[in-house]
Length: 595
Image 1 (tube, rainbow, N blue to C red):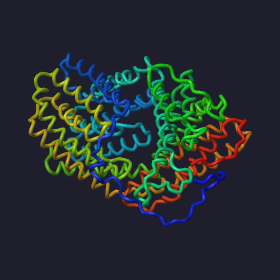
Image 2: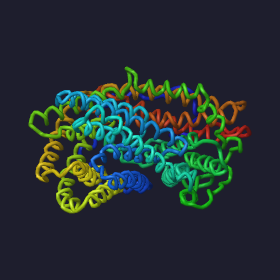
Image 3: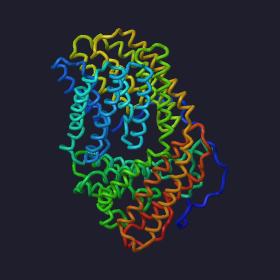
Image 4: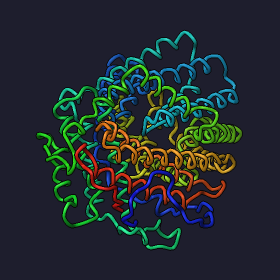
């Protein structure tokens, strides 16, 4: 980018031909490649083991292992919300538990009223679509809708009477309440743990950005092989740093009342933001090693480091109390509800994915039923698990799910004799695979599926022994048919709204950039207003990148405005860098582009 003053308004873009969206990510090697484990993989793994062990062992002592499917529905709620601060996690998990109980109730009532396979499959597909839409709209995060669909679909095909339903739902609700306690128990030891991890990630991403920010003139900044340029890591690093900083601010805003630790964390996020300004080694540049050292101390159990003030800042700018108060006020809560309803409204880009889920799950279920498979709900769950943000990611998930399930049935065949030694052995096997699934799934979905598959098959053993050959054969057939039918439906149901989401994100980024420039250039602007404008711009850039990546993975849609998207991102990051140099009422340097 050139070192010219940043002007409000839409960036000037030389008109270039619109590029059709390219098909990306279809390499099986790329889809199956292992990633480093998540830095918090052990938290959901340990949580689900503890949340499951107590109900399982209680039912074992009572001689009612046939109720494990209902207790497991509540125990699996412990998988959610581990990236949220504890105040937000408490509310989110209440919604997860109630949503689980509601979906299970619909399934149990339906199963008690009809034995028609066609009706059961239709209800299962409809529930899967609703669960997918709600999880995407609320952004609850992994494992998202898959657990809800697994529980509700399995319950549809379990024998049920109306008089049994209250007791079964009570078991689920009790296990869910215990899972809520397990998920929140770490707050007694480390109250700011989620905030510390979020800030540490922001510092680490900022260190990478400071170490390799890319060229300043912008002439060689490209998107990689798609436009013929060499891959420059600078834009990618800035996007990752912006996303991490945005996530850190969001975590701090949702964390509850300010504490000394959270104030120190806010100062560290300011330092991470300041790393965007540094063009590379030299005076005034952010020190990557210092950022990494702060990240290590922040992630640890010792005191949070207290950094010096960032250049050009004043102490009042560190606080986000005013913004937190606005979000917690009645009007702020109403605005959040309106935003949620807009994400679910008639024009929502989430609706095509929900329609894909509906038709894909229905097609998979009816196809398996027509072929005489005894458990079509496995095909419904397989199809539901495929649907990601776009078609390319759904294709990758189809490969991962198929490979993981096929390997998983081999593991099940090997461990089945051990599980039948005693009921306690069966409980221990389920707990082991529950831990293994969460420990491995962050490496790659297929690796986690290798553990999920035997666990799902072993659950059937709580209701009585089944022929191993029948279980394995049904599972293999359901997996193959479910993946094929689900992906076929995904290709037939197009998502042309993805490009419209990009256009809306571009307009929102332009408005946020103009607002940030106005407040940055106004010496009378309040410090809190400037920081809020910067955070809004960062959020719009993160949304723009997410919308662009989602649309680029859709196969059948109109051409994307890629040149405008790239120009908007460059201009947005220039503005972030320029306004960072004017933080505080005493700074009067001109707005200078820094990319």
